Image 1 (cartoon, rainbow, N blue to C red):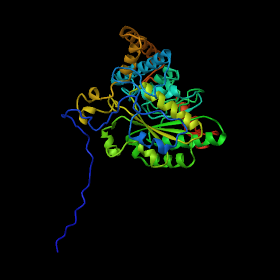
Image 2: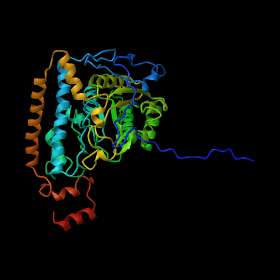
Image 3: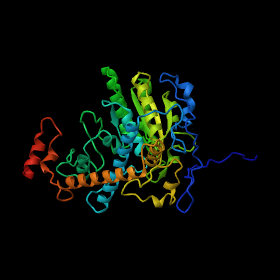
Image 4: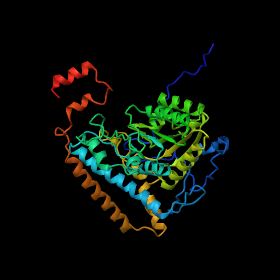
Length: 412
């Protein structure tokens, strides 16, 4: 008797291109700007089920804002968003240099992803709470958090708000109006923390929204599953952002399941409304974020937003992307650069110019340099100026005897 059984074979996904290949984004289907309609916030999610496979886009190839998702922001609001994105980019560039010369141990930039954090932040309200990952420094910058404090945290000096207890780039702020929960190095834990926070806000009867971020790779973590279950069952007032920047360190988004489906579809499986947005289109991110926040605030349940973008730089200063992706892939990214696109839109409106843009870049660069020098004056490296006694504080309401004895042995 002939055995016709097919033997199992393990499938391992492969990215579309590797070093030495030509960049290939043929897998990314990009609809025309303005193609999707903008529904009312109380729409039945089944009516917009196809949104998880489409893409909300506002800026067309000519830099014009088209379609129902156009938020119709005033020119000054557009300039404000552009200024914050430029500031984030200049800040990233300066701190990358600081790491390269040994003045801080580690850095992660958000190059190419500035619109995701800045536009999202400005679309939400002052008392809303963010649970970010390590590439959303634009959330703090766009809420006018002290850049000096951020740099001191990176340098780990005596003015570091978290007293040297966190890896550089893991900022934290409990200041009113900043709404920035401590970054977690254990990826995806911020999702479950955010859902819990949102449930507490609902229990207290506030109208505050919670917004959490993970990358495409982190969606493969079990905490994302747990968060979505609770967000769905309890209709938690939370926006679950998935920043699909194509690469989780050296692992392509396909390894997290991005080949056979979209990340926005993750929400649909749990009964959560899903949107997919052009993450390099400032207007689209702003509009989708505002729509999601309004829906969540109205008590209609959580919303998942997949931001389709590209990590233009290395994963971190410990990473070399030339080892796993083709040269020129960042330039070949078909959704362009978020700063360039918003700049072009303003120029198209007759409200901006290349000369004004260069002036803005120089202005922000000088501000970052001046702020960096001041922050550096408080110490860095071996001359950090931190008080060694701080390692014993802020741990217990009443310091245990064993900790007191440890401190006494150090004589501090």
